[in-house]
Image (tube, rainbow, N blue to C red; front, side, top):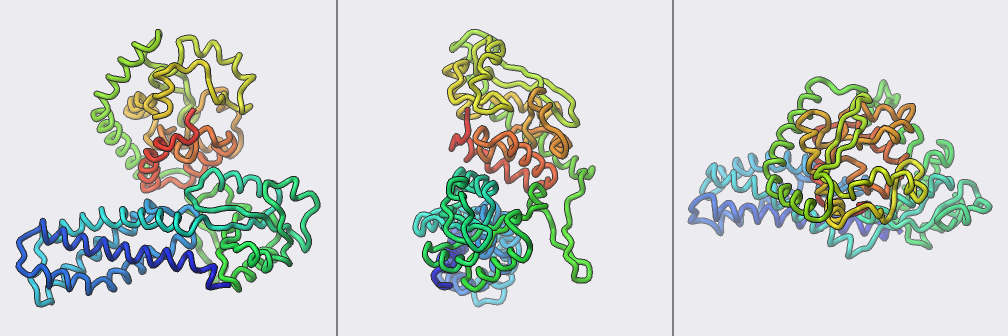
Length: 467
């Protein structure tokens, strides 16, 4: 059974290794073609192929074949920091390697082309491999060990994000027998109790267990881990305390006692300066590139309906201070006057959420689906009222509903994009949005901002949650 459940990981690791080897050889070939004039190309490529085991060992040392097993949401984008570092080190080692071989040495132009090509080819090949492997082997079958409340939350999130490649197939009741009424209360069937776990895993081809710490005590959790270790089943745990602490928690120890290190609550001056610098440069470049498109949008809005070009609205920004946010107008001129009458039809009690808002114009619908209506917010970024990435800027009535730890979301400047925009927008409930914003603020990093910016375009193209 262990071999059966390890097949998915076995296949993915080897496909990734084959793809990495292909990327290295392709980069060497491109370097030979563009970097200089070689008379020994065949020998050069032969020794390049001979170096592939060392490359794969280097990538293995950087954990590039192991993180898919540990992390549910791991993507090629997450590999980039390690790929960059491995490419730099590997390129320098390749230069030294060719100096001792019976072939022409690699000149600087070849080395530069090789490094850039490797950084381009490897992520592309890895993304294609992951997509192909996911289609070939299908989604990972997941069994939940959780109480009914957490089961509903987990199932909704997993089903809302098919890119994770996880298929929840059932739940295990906490106790020796299935809980009475669990089947009706839970969105998943109850397949048995903890004593039945080994049989359930075998009968339903389970590949991963997701355990909520809220489902029981430490002894229960350790028992689940022991069973899963026997069967080589992957385990993901949702700790109770760390619900909104995020991925930057570091495991530390004091003489064998486990201690969790958490980010300080306030960004350092250097971090704030780096974030602000990225905002100014990014917004300036984006405005220059988008200027012709913004002119066309302005003409289309004026031709489509009467009213101002921009829609301005007061939003709550950093430290609770209000500012005027600008967007291209996507609604009829008297849209705000009709807001109160439409609140009764809203799908959420916290904000106005309609499947089909009658106030949206024809051009406005297109602008919203493509998120082009938000381009004027780049001016807010330049003025320092917003950031490229940050918590969602809320109107005063929505902000007033947030209390307690949720107020910490205002410790950073609100952003044009962020977790809410990338992960589903209006598909995400109000309470979950607050958690995501808190998670962003408490786990800020420069790479995190870059990663969210890179994930924004695919999210816009998929139009998930666009309203």
